[in-house]
Length: 248
Image (cartoon, rainbow, N blue to C red; front, side):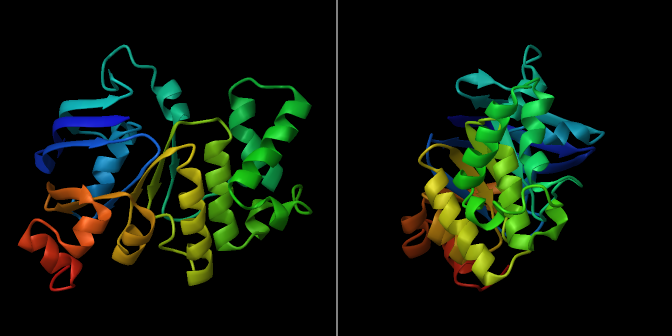
């Protein structure tokens, strides 16, 4: 589903990513772990070209999604971002009703059929394990929801336009343990239909939700392995030292 080949990435003269090659398979959860500032969020944002919005950045290498280099000049970036949803660290609902938050992407894409939109909003809220909690609040402001509910609403908003890939940049770091648990259960359910890539500082979370884990350090991919192997028997001593809390 996602293949990177010899990725080097620069913010001005600073090299944030160094020669990263990896493959992420469809319908799996891949977690990126590593200390702050190690490049994992920068790498994640390559997949929907969010880094394009930052002046002075430069990319070398290839980033292939479904076999196409997404940095080719022929790529439609709007279509790419529709296919690759993103959920950020802090919930960021729009200043609209719960219903309109989910319907927004459908309307932007030119859908006007009210029944289709209503059905899609309900279907997507159910997929985000939120419908039962908000079915009586659909016309109320999204800001009235709890933080955990807002984050699941943002996931529903991303799912409404039917992406194939969902990127999550520390989606539970601002949430309480119960909300975090709901997000993790949701990730487990969603991978049946979506390919998920998650950045997390929480190594226990990576161990619980992911199939494969990449450990980043100072812009390099130190190790990329099956999650179970990574946490029980990593190939590299530096990985073992990070996972056991000796640094980071």
